[in-house]
Amino acid sequence: MFSRCFSVLAIACQKEYYIRTLGVFMEEKAKKQKTNEPVSPLMERLVSLAKRRGFIYAGSEIYGGLGGTWDYGPLGVELKNNIKKEWWKRFVSYRRDMYGIDSSILMNSKVWEASGHLKNFVDPMVDCKKCKGRFRADKIDVSSGCPTCGAKDFTEARPFNMMFKTHAGPVEDSGAEVYLRPETAQGMFVNFKNVIDSFHPKLPFGIAQIGKAFRNEITPGNFIFRTREFEQMEIEYFIKPGGWESQFDYWLGEMRKWTEFLGIAKGVSEREVSAEDRAHYSKRTIDIDFEFPFGKEELYGLAYRTDFDLKNHIEKSGIDLVYYNEETKKKLVPHVIEPTFGVDRTMLAVLLNSFAEEEVKEGEIRAVLKFPARLAPVKVAVFPLVSNKENILAKAEEVHGRLKESIDSVRWDDIGNIGKRYRRQDEIGTPWCVTVDYQTLEDGTVTVRDRDTMKQERIAAGELAGYFHKKLSQ
Ligand code: ATP
Image (cartoon, rainbow, N blue to C red; front, side, top):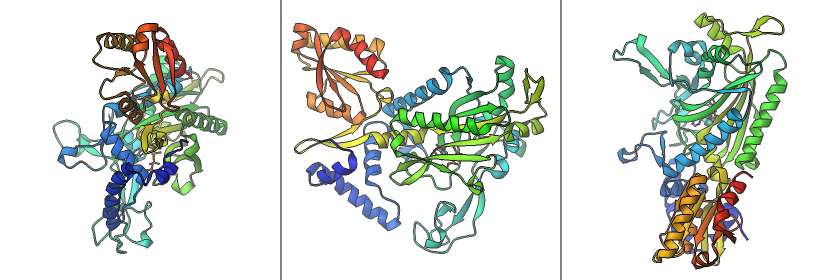
């Protein structure tokens, strides 16, 4: 009976609920058709839900926004933190060969000279001479005209460096110029020697971090897909020179497993990036694409960075960033495999993949976010069946208080009838709802309702924590 958004959309189109939202959508579509902006009903509905329920807001909204920036609301930040927490556990805490760091966003400008970003971190930019629209030449089909006004009158493509420039200190002269990092990776390279000196790891080993990166994208868009400020989860995995192919395959496998954990593996595909499209530092890159509603686009990347970065930092800094091989008694410059994951694109893929609209009974549609339970911003919601009966309220508060001590993010909800509370929790992706009712007072059991199956079962209140822990570890 229940199916994912597309098929249900078709069934539900006649329903009043849809007629209302569809009306808004059609107006927006008409508006967008005038400007040739792409329209995706699924995205429209998700953006609207994300705003309404406190996941994601437009940045600086009260001042008309700021292009390419988004703010995460109370539920968005929980979802984002859960993604980062699961990533960190899997790729850092649970491994013996990984060292986590948190390096500065502002770095000495020489870092970007050594890494090649000052010279090579450029996108080709064209301007439409008619409407003055600005585009990335590699992302539009110049021969079919301007995506905004249709004119076929572009400037020549010219390189545009995407790094944000600012000044450290009160004097704005050229010596004080610094850049907001466009990738977190360089933090791992500049701390390579520090980690070796502190921990003496054996090759292969990795340094990982999660943090903000900034790119002055020419055309930010598609919600949180392409923004100017975003977060990355990156690993620089240092290996002996030679034999990089097996490490590359291993990390591809680990990235696949991560997409399976997120529940998005079905929408994912891998693409070998050609030599001319690869970043300046890479000898081999596989992009992991996701089937977004606006097309198949990069979600993650896996690159073989060779010894490019360490060698250049050795040359430019004069510091010996080498590894001493105890077996051969020789120094070597390790090579690097880099798996890189965008946090915001992960959020978008998870939101899109989890979003469904289902006809629960004749004429009643529910919107639901079927997050994997460990990612859900709220894990359990506790309801008193009625809010005007002292003994039920007291029992529900006791259940809520006890659960809060052992499960992250347990919510209380006593507004409206139970049906409305279920719909509200479905919309924010809460996997389980617990209702304390009259029977609880008699036999100590509560109703646990499952978000996906909508089935209810009775469980002893004292066994709830164990029950949810078991479910969360599956
Ligand atoms: P694209 O081709 O889409 O511009 P990229 O190849 O430049 O991406 P990388 O340099 O490989 O991206 O960055 C690593 C990861 O960081 C990407 O796989 C993506 O998840 C994320 N990312 C990159 N740019 C952005 C952005 N502007 N907004 C949000 N996430 C981004």
